[in-house]
Amino acid sequence: MNGVSAIFYRDYRQRMTNIGFVFWDLLAPLAYLTLFGVGFERMMGTAPVVSGESFGYTAFLVPGVLGMVTFSVAMNTSWGFFMDKESGIFYEMLTYPITRPQILIGKIGFNVLLALLGSVLVVVLGRVALQVPVRWDLLPVQSVVIVIATSGWFFLFSTFAIALNRMDAFNTVTSAAYILLMFFSSMFYPLDDVPAWFRFLAYLNPMTWQVDLLRFAVLGVGTLRVLLMEAAALVAFAAVCLGFAVRTLNRAN
Amino acid sequence: MTNAIEVEDLRKSYVSKAAAAVTALDGVSFTVPAGHIYGLLGPNGAGKSTTVKILGTIASSTSGHARIFGFDVARASLDARRRMAVVLQQTASENLLTIQDNLLIYAYLHGVSRHDARQRVKHVAEEFEIGARLNDTVQELSLGTKRRIQVAKIFMLDTPLIILDEATTGMDPLMKRRVMERLRLEAREGRTILLTTQVLSEAEELCETIMILDKGRTMASGTLQELRKRSAQIFRVSLSFADSTVNLEGLLGSLNAAELQVKGRNAEMVIHGEQASLLAKLAEISRTVTIQRFEVRGPTLEEIFMNLVEESR
Image 1 (cartoon, each protein chain N blue to C red):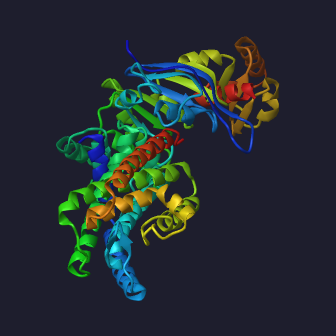
Image 2 (spheres, rainbow over the protein chains, first blue to last red):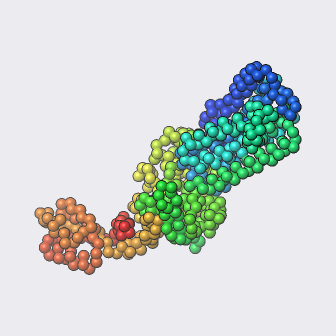
Image 3 (cartoon, rainbow over the protein chains, first blue to last red):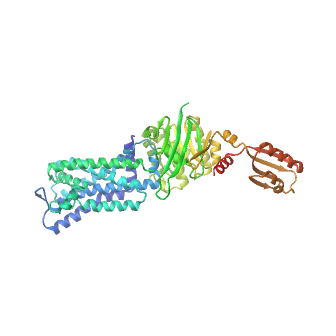
């Protein structure tokens, strides 16, 4: 077994010791989509417009919920570093004949699969139960975005999880990130009608890049030039975060 | 002969927010030939664990070099890690997984094939008496058993170098003995072992070469015989007297013993000084009271260690 697959296997075994947690990762987004999507759609009455096309709020929200899936899976996986530190295995692992990037990539590997499964469940629920006009032909694009985004968020949060010694400090960071990154993005509302300063901040946010790409992958909407820039930015974000996480692992002790 | 470990002028300073920079290692150098058992001894804060962390590529040195089978731990860390198995001072186990998964995953992470790993689990489980508990979750185990599994893991591998940082702490005496016997066997078969310990009898029994560290500096190093020579002016003296009514504390006062224990007609002492002067004083005592038996030995490792540490303070 090579390093990445051995770490992948380890994380799979770890995650399978708590099936309830896995189910929660998969079911929470479905609950968000059903409750928020249906609830807000009825309440708002008007449909959001993206790139000149109008959709029901539930359809608009599906890519946002996919963003939540990647974010939650990445956050929960990076939190695992605290368990590893507490058990001492984190430090022992640094003596194993595997590279630091292999540790990070192996660790997110199994959890990326979970994120992909979660995203498929969201899309299937959206199409079958909530009549979202899903573009099945763009499913591969959706999968690629889910993989890159989950990895990117994981590398970002891992940097904090490795560097911080206190779990409460990490929880503060992730809670703040959760609020700021989700609400300063195109996750819950179109950015066309928000104030200019808000839109400026939102376009600096990787969550916006991810949700816009997912909105294209699910509904087929968006401007190609903007989407290409956002795709490049998302890949760069993941690569830079991997670099930071590796650097932090190298300075872990 | 190839050197398994080469450490040259290794220094490590930590910058602390609360205090001035702390020097954990201050120019430590040593070489461990392949197939040897080498012991690092020292009190808490001596720099033993820092040395292990640098060799294990967990921490970086401030300056100096450390090489494992010729591979620099800073510049060729992966090559260095491929050649060693490390037991850290801190307990390290996958608490949510079973003992079997702990052993298997450790082997997989060191590149052992699935088939070989499963075969080795059987042998290791038998040797470390955990065969009946392979499916127990580690978090249910006692600290001593967790430590046993941590040490058992290294025998899932064939790495040419084993590094153990106070590995037998918390183990029961029988298991400790078994681990020591196994380490001796591994060394005979060509594996190199570097161990740190505060249990001096363990080092005395196991190590071919010993280095004593204190406050990040080398106090002494060499074989046990060489260290004894270095502390040639320390003697452990045992005396048995014929007469049980004599006040031995008073009688032996002239020897200025660093330690004196009297039990009935017997006295045990640790004396610092010239051998000739000691023998002259013993002869003088024997003229007053009959000495039935006397024995003068060189110092134990503990006495050498205490002497060196006290000298440095």
